[in-house]
Image (tube, rainbow, N blue to C red; front, top):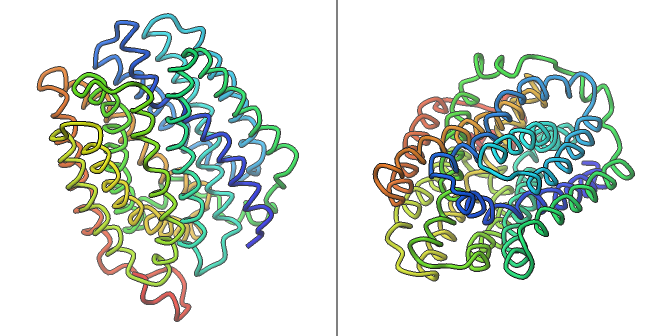
Length: 393
């Protein structure tokens, strides 16, 4: 492992994802104040994810061919412009357009950063390094809402958007100056289509279904947890930020659970973690106040922390066969299907059945996702022959 490249990569990711997470507690409420319906709020979140879904297959494969750094820098530049675009937006339609533009930038950033890390990860240590990466990634995404809540309560929504742009600019400068390009030989080993791995690899089919379901659960908590806390429990934007930021220390568990994914049964870790997440997301509508909701959200996050590094480690193994950029793009596509379809589907359900129904629906979808993963993952063995890897199926 090139530790210098790793630390530069995660530092720039932390900065940019901190900026991205700032708007999480703000955007649904910001849109609601513009007069957006629950369905329109769903489309605002979905615009970002659907654009990711369209762009990811091309970005992953192109980065396999031309290198990672140019995509990382271009993506951060687009994210800066999109951050300023939120200030320009005056109605829900304009917010949707800005989110679509933001999705273009994200498609050139997060999955390419994961592919970069996959390029430099040693065989047999996939869970360890992806666990470290996910811990930092999810921690920064969780801290962002807390900062966003504080900034919005103390200043204004526009101040929050300006800070988001400044953080993305800092990440861009750091990437330009400090992050080396991956050796061309590492990037160009495979240039297969993102869908080639889905067609030929059963474990990728299972992980794909699992990550779609995870995307639905994230769509539920990111879109409707702030609204549930605000409308049903009377929580301030600051407390909603605290609620989402509570995931930060739990996300750091992935540095530990990632090492477990290199030593123990990955299917078991994914299954156990997902069952825990299913239980506690279904219990969220029963929360009577801030503290019960905080406990349920935290326990759901613990389950996810056990599942995600093991799932990502599978993708790294398969990426060495089908192309790291293409495989990471496929993995991210799956989550964005959930993130894209989830807000629209759940928004429609909420409009007809109430906000509590979003959490019950997300739990059912996550159950279907883990069942599909178990079905396709049966009989899997890693595409390497090292003795120390045999127990990690």
